[in-house]
Amino acid sequence: MTVIASAANSTPLERDAQLISAHDKIEPGEIAIGVIIGRTSEFFDFFVYAIASVLVFPSLVFPFVDPLTGTLYSFALFSLAFVGRPIGTLIFTFLDQKYGRGVKLTIALFLLGGATMAIALLPGYARVGAVSIWLLGFFRLCQGIALGGAWDGLPSLLSLNAPQNRRGWYAMIPQLGAPLGLTVATALFAYFLAILSTEDFLSWGWRYPFFVALAINVVALFARLRLVATPEFTRLFENRELQPSPPFETLRKQWRVIALGSFAPLASFALFHLVTVFPLSYVLLNSDESPVRFLTIQGVGAVFCVVSMLASGLIADRVGRRAVMGVSAALIGAYSGFAPQLLGAGQLGESLYMISGFILLGLAFGQSSGIVNSSFDPHYRYTGAAIVQNSAWFIGAGFAPLVALFLASHVGLWSVGLYLLSGVICTLGALAINREFAQRNT
Image (cartoon, rainbow, N blue to C red):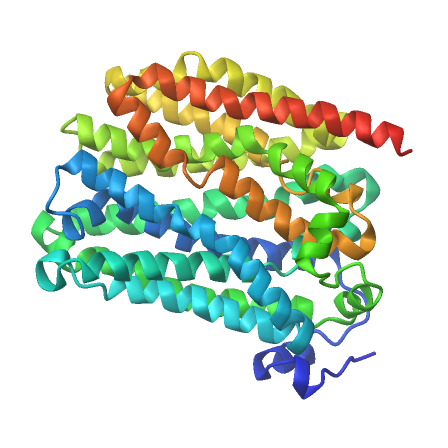
């Protein structure tokens, strides 16, 4: 049976997607493909900006300060996206309720792709002075607002359609977008760094990965609309399981679940930036190592991360998602005691830090999505999951590169381990509290 969307709550792209998706039952495999494409596009945008924050913006936008200070300033602007996420949730929840999920998603992804492409056209400080800084900050904030609005409920739809004995596997699938997006982003930057002179790269070569983002977002938009336009999604939407609720009401009614969900993944979210963004900045600032080599290590690490994530899904289906998160958090705690110092121990130490970190990241991050979402009342699950995601990224990851580089440069690498350990403590505490909370409500 085909569900025909009204003009008030759909876009031409969504209506075209409905013609392709006019079957009654949506299969978990179809949802998984759409989720992977969507998350890979988002993380590709994310990593393109993150890598440029280290390789490009300190000299292009902040040439008036030393490289360390310029990188810290660049990381401060990097954090604006995480400030913008909650704003995006508020704005786009209104659009969702008034005009429909297709309109909301289309606007959000075009805003994300447009802001990313606009960064590609950014004039440097040498041409326009401080205007360059303001423009970069504005475009970065727009990226965050768009990411906050791009929440489509597909991970929740995937979870609702997953077989009972495969919940760990299907919870892992959305997380694959992170290492896949990192792989593509590092490959593009490494390619242009390898074939261009430093002058040409800083002049125009770095801009090409940003242009690629718009094309990827268009593909991702159609893949996601094809799913949100299906009768199955519509049925769950009409049954209120995937219907947006007022954000402030959701916060008031479900604050405990939101708090637990925000702190539960902090170990993996802190480690996320400490093996992707921070080490690139630290190594390039404190050694003469080629950025191509280090980007290659990151790409290899991302492959290990994918394998580790797949393993996390299989293990979680045997022992439970909470057990996987708890054990992986404890392992990250052990890792925090010695691994950061490896960054200062030469190329072998850097490689050990990166590969072992990515393996742990795969185990922990693979199960970090929506660990407490089942605790939400069905009416609040859609918006509550979005708030949890935004809050966890803001608390656990938004300022991680800035804090880690500042601590490493002014205190020592050992202090980065303490910072990571604080995330581990938050994760273990939240998992313990959530277990007691769940037992009292069964």
